[in-house]
Length: 398
Ligand SMILES: *[C@@H]1O[C@H](CO)[C@@H](O)[C@H](O)[C@H]1NC(C)=O
Image 1 (cartoon, rainbow, N blue to C red):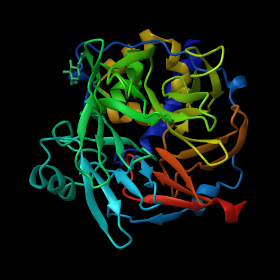
Image 2: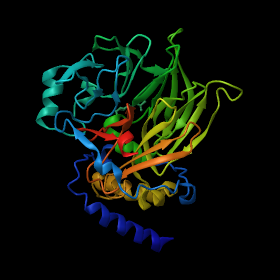
Image 3: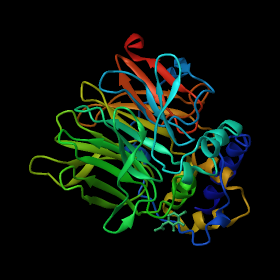
Image 4: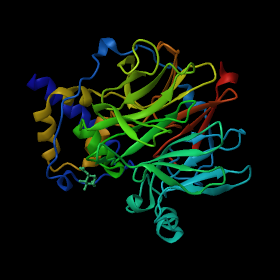
């Protein structure tokens, strides 16, 4: 084991050195004196769907609004089809009114243009030092019945704002007396109940890379009950739970488990109601999931699992040792994603079979995707680390 481990490591370091100029920022692991590493039950290579995109079709995506927006994670359209709306690095939810980006809403009561928007303009990056003050809207969903927008804000919990926008109201910030530290994504059922994820109770979004290293198993799957206004834990001990999306027939929803590279299914109806099973195994780290009109699921994936990830997934001692070395955490992260950020998006059938895969395997045009929203045959792709929205004309390409 030792010799291939060293070889893998050397390869990973070599690959990662290409990324020395990568704009992904990271603090040092020294900021986490109590850093704990946990094993990850990754799928074996033989379980990973073999599909690849030989033509790297994502390279042909159109890039919109480059430089006008920073880190548009989620992309949503309101019930009248207007938008897109997207949540960005300075804490705002922006609305494209057809001509320009307008400030639609924010979830932080402390949000000010001076402190929040100006800082991001001055130093565009995937996040800024004040995001815990300014907020960071991740998942966005409209309530189709009344036009309310629900926001999973990484710092300010599950929030809701009316169709006119403004300051959103936090409707859930804790469950079982434990505060959310990283609210991530959500979806609604027809009664207005909200299913959502808290990626970790220990790590915040600005430390998402450390959360990825640690595989901290404190993530929770939650339900906000629209009638009782109570929040309950549906499932716990998850490693970086992230995207949530209802099935078209409303009998279940799927949620992504970031560290483990898979989608799980939470049954809402039928004899399996209240139970969780495996929905699909994925080749990398899943982020958001969105359901299209046909009831198919689009899942955004950050990179394929690298050799380094496989090596570290069960060797917790090795992970702790490597992370304790004076190597910039940035480099560790590059190794984790196989040296080069690159986008992978997958379309799954309503029962979890792979229908299609689109990639930009060298990260030439679309190096990262956090969400895929299909509208009128086009795929709208946001990313928490890019400064644009990518649009792929799927109907035309098919
Ligand atoms: C939430 O995150 C903050 C910042 O990293 C940390 O200080 C705090 O201890 C975390 N909460 C819990 C319960 O670990």
